[in-house]
Image 1 (cartoon, helix red, strand yellow):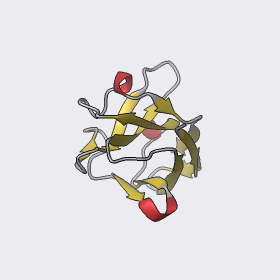
Image 2 (tube, rainbow, N blue to C red):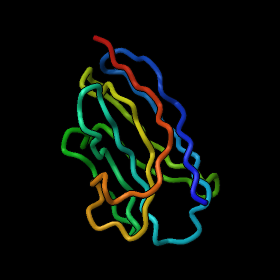
Image 3 (cartoon, helix red, strand yellow):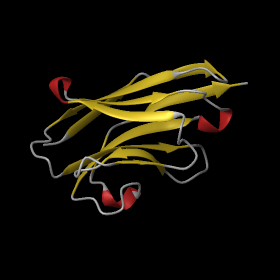
Image 4 (cartoon, rainbow, N blue to C red):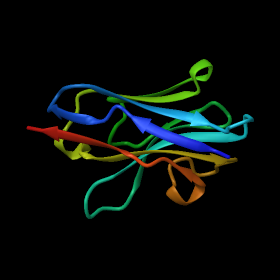
Length: 123
């Protein structure tokens, strides 16, 4: 059973940084991709970044150069380091997992989701 638990959200000012964590359990083989999504009020859930089963990385254009996704296998933890935060980054952030993902930032490709952690960026 795959289980994902996010932490690290909070309220920050424009330009500040924040690191999100996702404890991942039940992912037992290298066929899984892990990703971060976000959903702002009234908007669709969108892919932010992913670590793919072939070890490649994918980023949404809106976060390239500002966000970094990484994974610590020893700690079973996925991270999202967010820098130069903007008000438009305000959203609930979700961790997701899925097997043999083809479209790495597509919501429908992922089967497992965490409960989310809120990020609020104020100007």
